[in-house]
Amino acid sequence: MKSEQDSKMAKEHSKELLTALYQQIFYTSECVVPLYDVIEDYLFQDLDYQRLMSVIPLWMIDAGRSPESMMDKECYEQLRSMFNDPVSNRIIHWADMQGVLNAFQDRVMSIRSYLEVIYKYLPTYCLYEDSEYEAATRGLDETSDKVHTAINNVFVSLCSSFDLFTKVVYECSEYDSQDFSKYKKLKCRTQSILYKKGNFGFDELKADGLLYSEPKYVRTAISFRDEFIHNGAWDYRCAIYYPFVEGGNPVEPFILMPDIDIEGRLVSSGTRNKFYAKGNKINVFLPELVKGIMELLNNTIKTLINVLQKKTSIKNKTKATEMAICRLLGNQIVSKKNIMGDKYSDEELLKDMDFLMPEFLSLHSIIARLCKGLTLTKDLGIQLMYSGYSNGRPFRMLMFVLLLNETANLRDDAQLAYHLLKEAYIMTDNIYGQLKKTTYDFALEDYLENLENELPNRNSDELTDEEKYIYEGLPQKVTVYRGMCDEEKQSRQFGISWTMDKNNALDYVFYKKNEVIGDIGWCANMEIDKSEIFAVWGVKGEKKEIVINPKKCKNISFCEISKKDL
Image 1 (cartoon, rainbow, N blue to C red):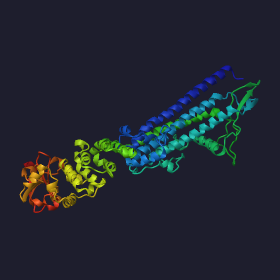
Image 2 (image 1 turned 90 degrees about the vertical axis):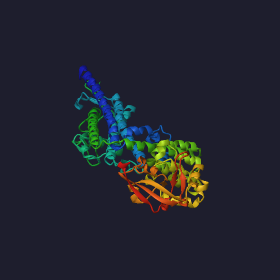
Image 3 (image 1 turned 90 degrees about the horizontal axis):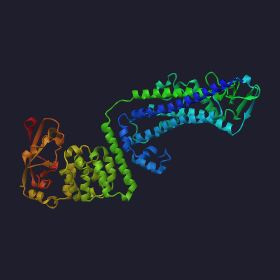
Image 4 (image 1 turned 120 degrees about the vertical axis):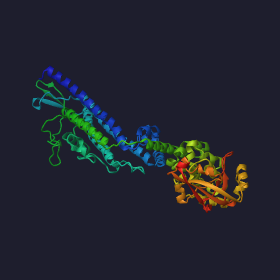
């Protein structure tokens, strides 16, 4: 018999061994925490994801993934179709990847729970050699079922963690930030990616001592897992052996372990692969196996972090992030409108437009979706063009063109269109600069011609009293002036704003808000018949402008103006 001191020392060592092993498992799980941040930086090299998080709708993260979300499939897919843009699709993709990484952590941590079940009933040691046993009883009961189930689950969880980590590696290696115009399932799902030697990703992860060099411990875990999953329990009796030594004294119980070869696989002959000639005990072997695999995983995680950090470039993300935030919020507004249906009022629309209008160039498609089929009144149209207050001023002509193309009635209501065009014209800048950026087929000169035909009496019926007074006081032949940049002169695509005051025209040759390039400009002048003037427009109490369709501009004279002479 072993001494009481030997037994005491073995128990203390077993306790220390398990404590260290559980700490190692926890440490492996904690190693994943910085990996989240590193993958996030790698996936969003052009965006500040931490800033995006404040505006990411919760359904993108947990719908279809968490029991805390009550959203059904139909609602999820409806929202996903509303948010079908590259940024939203990337966010959903990253949330899906996080789900895999979450599962990897869960599998790692579950191993401790299974080990605790095993070592509640069995020790991590056997003080006696098989030759010292004189007899043994075989336990086939609830305890043995619990322990064998826990042992099988250790192997399943280990191998599941290999598969899950491989999926993460594969997604990182195959990631293309430009490939998200449509929602995409994880590639590891569509291609059924699982662990295998050599992996599907980065060569750096194939080095010795890492998971994808397929070390002996990994082969052993896979061998036992495959046997359990595909061929049943590796001990069909699920027995615990309770041995006795000299004098009938009971000693440490154990579970026999099938023999493994030098490469870590089950020794096999034909279809048989459960030989017990070596007398190894699984309860003694498991701590060493789990410890070795945890170290492999730790090293592999750290290597992946290093690989991704080297592949992550530092960029200025501010502008792109701000655009992404706007688009996310814009999509939320569209989804709100669709969900509210008839309850989405003009007041709601105007409130939302105050947010969207200052970002018109990046959010025009969302604005178009909100205005689609809308029936305009004059007041509503003016309020929409004035959305965003002064921050929306640079886009009011673009907004008019959008309303012309998206609303239900504006294109067919010439009088309403005339007044909204006038409002956009008076209260914006750089009209032609704006129109270069429209996504619609729109030529201002053609549209003015249409309005001229639709409203032949516009200069008597549609002008304000101030405007009509000026128009009626004009001579039959009017000399007008226009300040313009060199680019406009060379293009012969003249603007519609003219004045009878030459000095006023000179103020606009290098007008800052027109984004003029170069130091040479021109003051144009021509004589035009009063009947060919489209309108006299202006803010009440201020100078009025002579609006002329460029198609009516003929026999123009030009005077060169140098910036330094002004």
